Image (cartoon, rainbow, N blue to C red):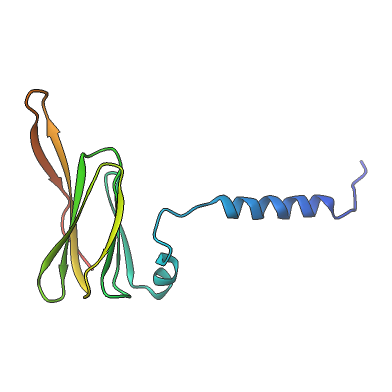
Length: 130
């Protein structure tokens, strides 16, 4: 068996890895990688609702909802004891800056049961300390 000793296979492999790295798109905010390296972010998941808390820069909360619930609400307790919220509908993403450190958070999914008339209900996660 004869092996080729030209740089073409190595170049193709390197190019393939570079393209794969470029096509991997993150589903978190752009500042998340820097904040995660500093150790002050916390990603959370409740069914298909994703939440990320960033206490590096004045308490940012980022949330993305899926199709499991009609909407979702993230309740963040701040260092001063206030409970602030971020509410989104189905298949939405958003972020809010609360201006102070977040000490705990929990997420509730808004749903409904029945057809006529549908009865609304909420399914909530337990509170997570940060």
